[in-house]
Image (cartoon, rainbow, N blue to C red; front, side):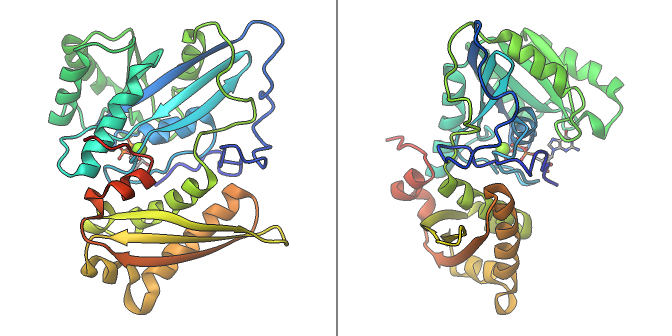
Length: 327
Ligand SMILES: Nc1nc2c(ncn2[C@@H]2O[C@H](COP(=O)(O)OP(=O)(O)OP(=O)(O)O)[C@@H](O)[C@H]2O)c(=O)[nH]1
Ligand SMILES: [Mg+2]
């Protein structure tokens, strides 16, 4: 299940003036400040987004038990004392096939390029899998200082981590190694503290009240997609994309949000809608509840499902996701 730590904070970030609960630590102090970029990389499903949310103390990036949940780079901003850490969550890295997949993997590698620290998050229970080997081979070609983050330690006896750590460090040298559970928060405080220490001296990169670079419109689409990932199976989640079509502020302080869900086939549309609309109703209800919490105001959410074969090869759809053209 998703970790909704800090779910009652304003997780919308962006430039929205409603990002008022950025925390007591928000204002940069008068003395010298530190700021830098910390990228989170790894195979799909390693727990990268769970970790980013945990480090930032707010739900910024969606989480599900299905691989390839994150599709584009998401920045979450962690302000602690004099230090600002800009965390970059990235899509899991895997062997891409579709244009969408290629753009996702390119976004992941792009996230590491300018970072001051790159954290390789490993699902330690899964161990040294083939996708992880491929990532390590690529990382060996050179990246920023690399930290190894062995995740999901709540799932097994941590004694079993020693052979895995030895195996990984024989393949690649890591400046630091951490053993954590992003889900329970175990070990995350030490990682957060070390990240803060590793940031270079310099002015903050984002205003103190910003929590992420995800706009409210993008957040709405992502929260709907999170429910699709959780409530449908097999091919449907990976062949669905969500776009926020309209956003209307109402006088009573509520907001009306209209989202379109594109799927690859009519059969997927039927699954998504469900028996007499039951599935889409449930998706809408849960997404609405989550958005009401994150946006801290009443939300009216309207979902429209369209089948659009080949959307995952369409440049316009990828651009709507914030992914760039590759060719
Ligand atoms: N038990 C346990 N589960 C975890 C932990 N961290 C993440 N998970 C679960 O692992 C699954 C994947 O987590 P995500 O954070 O979406 O993983 P990700 O690496 O961002 O995945 P992609 O975006 O698909 O690349 C979810 O079901 C999480 O709840 C952990 O420390 N312990
Ligand atoms: Mg993710």
